[in-house]
Image 1 (cartoon, rainbow, N blue to C red):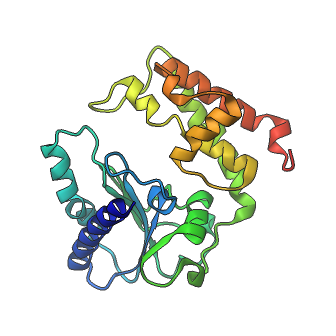
Image 2: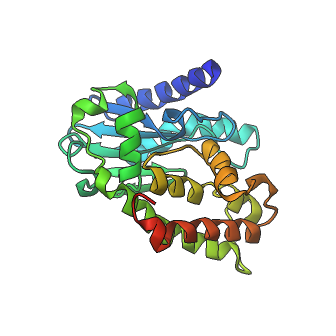
Length: 259
C-alpha cells in the first residue's frame, strides 16, 4: 500500500502546486475522499477524489482543471490507456459555506474527467460528506471535524434510495435495452461493468448506514445476492443484476429502518 500512497502523494502535490500558482493563497483546505479515503485506491484504474475549501475569489478553476491534470493525462496518452488513472476529480466549496448542512451548500465549481461545471458539484451530498467527516484525508487545513462539516445523517438513507430509484434505475434500464450505454474508446460491456458496483454500494448504505468501496461492494454483491460480478458477461446481465439490487432496496419493507 505504501507504493500507492507515494503515488497519490506525488499526484496531489503536483496538483496543489498548480493550484498555488494559479490561485495563490486561495486553496486553504484540501481533503481526499473517495477510494483513497476508503483504502481502495488502485493506481491503474482509480481517480483521486477531493474536496477543496476556497477562501476569496476563485476565477481560475477551469484552468486548474486542465493544468492540474496535464501530466497525468500525458502519461496515460503515452501508455495508450483508454482511461486516465490518477485524474484529480473534485469539488470546490467556499470557506464560509463548508460548515453548512451539506444539502444547503452550493459549490463554487467541480471537475470530473473532462467535465468542468461552475456552480455544480454532485459530490456535495450526504454520502461524500460522511466520508469526508469520518475518513477524509487532510492534505491541507483543519481537520474536517473542526470545520463543522454536517453530512446530515438523517437524510443519508433517503438520498441513497432516491439515487437508486432515479439515476441508477435509468442506467440499468438502458443496459438491458437494445442501445446500452457506452463511452468513447470503451465497449458497452466495459462501460456497464465499470459501474456495476454502484447499486450494491448504495444498497449497503441503505441497509447499514455505512459507506463501502467498490472493492467491498463486489463481496457484498456475492454475499447478499449470490452474484459474482465478474461472471456477468454482457450489458443486459449487468443491467438485470442492477435492477434486482434496486428493486430490493426500494421495496417498502426494506425502506423502513430496522428491517
